[in-house]
Amino acid sequence: MAPRVAVVGGGIAGLSAAHRLRTELGPDAEIVLLEQTGRLGGKLRTVELAGTPYDLGAEAFLARRPEVLRLAEELGVETEVVHPADARATVRAGGRTRHLPGGTVMGVPAEADSVAEVLSADGVAAVRSEADLPPIDLGGADASVGGLLRERVGDEVVDRLVEPLLGGVYAGDANRLGLRATIPALAAALDAGAPSIAEAVRSALPAPPARNTSPKPVFGAFRGGYRELIDRLLLAADAQARLGLPVRALARTGSGWRLEIGSAPAPEHLEADAVVLAVPAPAARRLLADPVPAASARLAEVELASMAVIGLAFPPGTPLPAHDGVAASGTLIARGERRADGTPFTAKAFTYSSNKWSHLRGANGEVLVRGSVGRFGEVAELQREDADLLADVRADLAELTGITAEPVDSAVLRWGGGLPQYGVDHLALVDEVERAVAEVPGLAIAGAALHGVGVPACVATGEAAATGITRGLLRAGGREVGR
Image 1: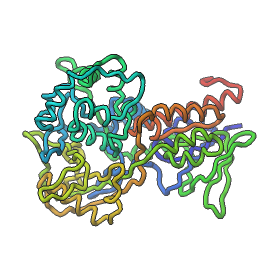
Image 2 (image 1 turned 120 degrees about the vertical axis):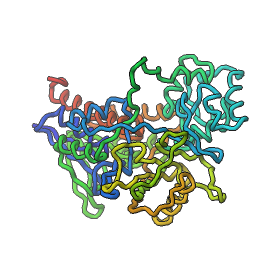
Image 3 (image 1 turned 180 degrees about the vertical axis):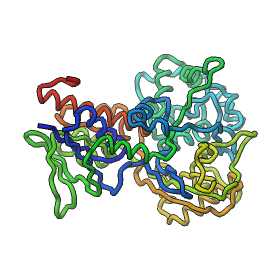
Image 4 (image 1 turned 135 degrees about the vertical axis):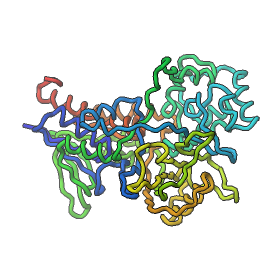
């Protein structure tokens, strides 16, 4: 009898799991995709802005990882993958906007001179003097990113470089984030014996491209937005998608699982041979409370940050910024930066999309810009009305770029609890969760709370969860995987 697998969560991890289940279990398997909201895609969201598809969730993916590129090829959309134009990121720190320095790992410099334009003289001196400190020995332990780096290379490296970059990925606080989960290359270099932060960065930096060769693109995106990937995944998975149905409870039965779904007054029940949980940490914690209490308890420790993304379309010909003759791809804004009138910046970053991506213009040539708001622990800004948030973000943009034109279109998208925070010892937490879940037959877990918040990492967790389920089902049926 063909198995029935329930995939709980219709984000990229859940969709990737459903697709991999279909390819591994074949056409007869019944795959039910349950999503409590009215749409699929999770934190991937393509809207229409000035008549063109525009992503207001995740913007790009790391092209140096293989998962998304491989998936695009499997789904026949590899020709829709695009890469950034020749533009450079900038950072607003110390009241000035400068190019984001090269020769760093997540903003941590290998050489003091490379960050001289962003740091003060005292900040540069702090980086330079790290060579005189005793060697670092983590002893296999994790450390706070902010705590370790402030002690070794000074506050300014953290406040002006590291935190703006980590804020773009996690909307997090560097003092609370764990080194091993958020800057693993640096941790690995220290484990391998690098005696200082500078030496660790030097050994972690990628090798320069060979002579007469172009470096491979770091990032990629889809020409028509992530909805191209989402639509193709759903089609290839051939899953029964049930939207607007929360999963309220999960229980083991003699032969599999029983899911309680729908409204509390009139729930329905779904029987399944196996379940993939591809939901945020709070939902996974709740559903695992009875069947896997140890995993539930650890997931309760994962904190979340909220944010909002604002899309702006300006009249054709609106000039976007350039620095030293090079187009700016965007501007990161350090915490505590203020406008000329003393008002704190509301936004934490801007992406000058029509500079960064050659294909991104409105239907009539409108210039597109994306602003991001929200850091961990700072919720007041996100509690304001859309119009107020939009007005402040426009004021920030005017301060940074001089753009005062009235937008011809705009959109505000809020992501409540959208980004899990990878605290100190996050890897140990995830290991305990996955070990506990793996001990329960027919159950797997995936999603951004585990091994990375980026799209490739989420795809990887979904596919790994699906393969684990497939292996268990085939062995239970007396077959080995691949036969």
